[in-house]
Image (cartoon, rainbow over all chains, first blue to last red; front, side, top):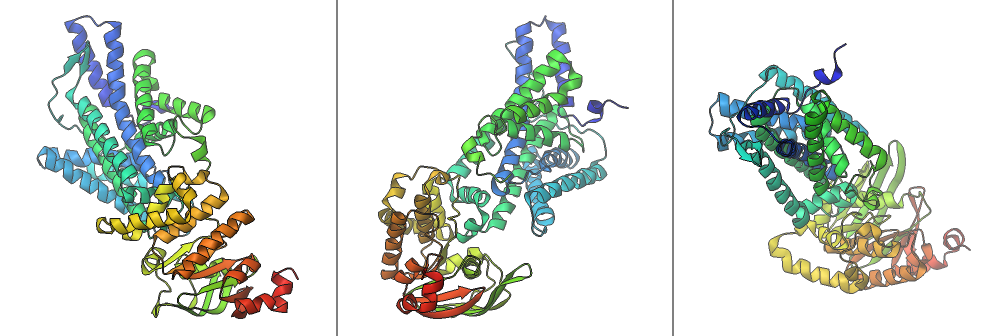
Length: 328
Length: 237
């Protein structure tokens, strides 16, 4: 038997690798203090956690409209990374153009997912729809394997790979891009859901689809929009994280599990919760890998997920009052 | 204004409505009474587009609206207050009211929307006090008021009300029916479905009695109040 943790796809294996290389080089230059090493783990954790947070936000957007947990969420991230590699590296499109083209294409994949896997199901229950997303994720993964093969792909970092040293920790500029995009996404989505009528209409669909259509809301269009949005931000996560951790066809499932853990930890449906949940899981993973054993990296997120489900199933920021209204 | 001809509808293979025909003249209040399971809610859902019908025509202002999706029908001026309120429970009272105006929520309509919000707050002052509260935390009566307010935001010419008195204290029921009657007097056509036959017959001009999916009686509401059969079955003798 092979060790199950070794055959699982690993987020950020490349990232941890890159960091270790940096650390080794760094160690040769000067001795590392414990503080700087801990700070290093924190920075890495926040970066990896930002990716989880974006995946968790993607879960929340679709959950918020349909109460479906879209397990194909991780595939959007994987597609974002790999399509970007094709556009930017293989076709040589300039960074910004390739970025926009990739996000657009993955958004279309998200819309197709709704059209082909979700909408055709007659008399859907939340559970059948969730199973449909799992099937879709397997199909997307298979298609990606046929297109890109089983290799790892790298992407040039947006602004070079010259590390910045802060308090003895090595920070790749790309880390800042990942964290920065998380902040941008959170700000835009907060405004969208709290201030615009379309954002509110999307939440209304989750609360009560029939009542929403009585108010003149086209529920199917809102579901389509939710898939488009979460595919789009998933692509952004994939594009920004690939220069750090590389990307391969089967990364999606583990990303989905960790993003789901982050969403549950923060409280399913809560956007601030998704961010906090993602950062906590990323940080625990980073410290756990550094201080305990890197072999258990993927286990940390799952342990956190289980502990949350045992102790506080509504998550850190999910209110019990609101969770009473939930159907799932 | 609304004319339903030979309407049949079914859930799965069970026919719930059988050849139902009713007329709702402009400016009137029409009520449909009947026992639980007689098909009253199904009838309203067929009109508002939530329910697919098998046969028949639903003419609204001479246009057959049968088969249109619900989100389009509300744009034509038919607004339903669904059974059991069906609020957007996690959203605030204010958001619920705003979403009622979704189908014409555009910048140029802002003054009109503002005016309507003021109007519904005038009708139900308690909602203004609760405007920042989460809708799911309101009392039953307040929720019913909010459901009506939300439906009125859609600027209906025809208002469909499904059991507005259900599960609400008698005093509040009276308050709600006062508002409904005022609305009707100021020009909104009302189609009301009620198990509470006494109230439904008192406030309406014309009434229909629905039994097992068929219209068995119709007439002026005041006449039905004195009808011996109605008295025995629906008014408790």
